[in-house]
Image (cartoon, rainbow, N blue to C red; front, side, top):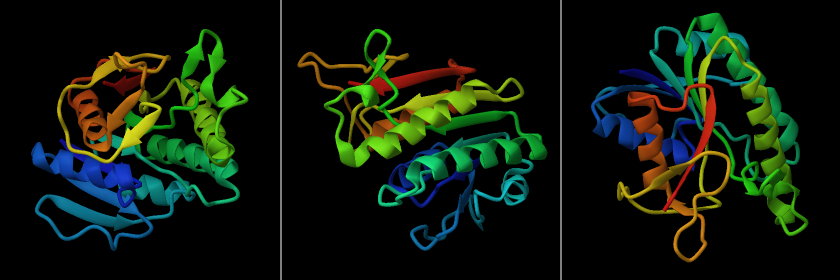
Length: 213
């Protein structure tokens, strides 16, 4: 497939680039900073501002699917508002370019730790991550309102660890996937694998899902 990846220079984005290329796909890596991405066969690098819908449309035109691992930066004091602003711009760009298939990677804070209660709303949720988690939760609601895109929203496990692909992950919907010890964990390698599995064989069109061990 011809896949556009927004946020390609981030931690998850770099893993997705590796996984997509390993599977033989052609990838257009879209980011403002492309220095982390070396030249590789079947990889096209495109510098673009995701807050500019016209720039997004130009970057993604002609692709079969778009993956967004966009994050405005955990140290950004406006992370919540910039997440929602970026999400709206991305959606507008996709529509302008006529690309229907899109997978958005968001945070785990919007997962339900108990029925009807998001993890981010817990008084024990870490303060340093709260604004970013709220931004990702807002982005989920924006995406859920879209009727013209074949969207999927993927929330990772509560703990995302550095590590290779094992292929042993399990899928869930709106509650964290937990292991035998009650932990919700997945490696960034397996998260990238889950992203490409969903792009290649869609099972969650207009749905949110999550992964974990």
